[in-house]
Length: 220
Image 1 (tube, rainbow, N blue to C red):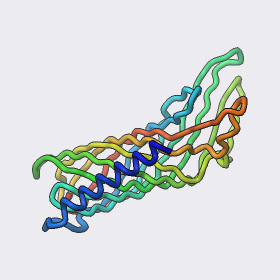
Image 2: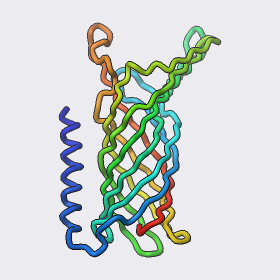
Image 3: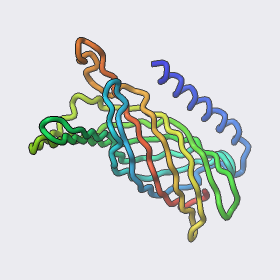
């Protein structure tokens, strides 16, 4: 709970500073929009369970509201695949399992732009609200395979803190953008937290690194 409150307060404080700093700017207003396409490397944070990053898809769109020439607020609507991959070998042979959790994600990001009209770079941060769309678990072990789409043991909503940075290059009438972002899960997404071994609690959170290309048709 403490890290949830700390993360949200930090995001709200940053947004308040950005809003106040742009009140008198002539650049204030809706300034940009466009598509986003990329991929995610995701894993789950769980005590006593070491898993690996899993490749997934990330795509969607965004709109931007400028406070001034440098500061803006960006809302995005994304389809993001998260989950994990786990591989091991035992007496029965190799064991490989993969979990894909699909989310409709709504990041609300404060962005600060550096640079000139020929090349720019930027940093951003903010919360990301995730809504579970579904998922799939698959495993192969000892020559046998198993699949399931029952994701009822994962909660329907997630909340993450996004930190990232990127580059912008003018192309045609807009800007081609590339960014790398880290999303740190703030919530326990496991729906049965009291079902651990020997009565212990289970706490699972999503972690993801996203590599995203986008095109801004407006005033980046």
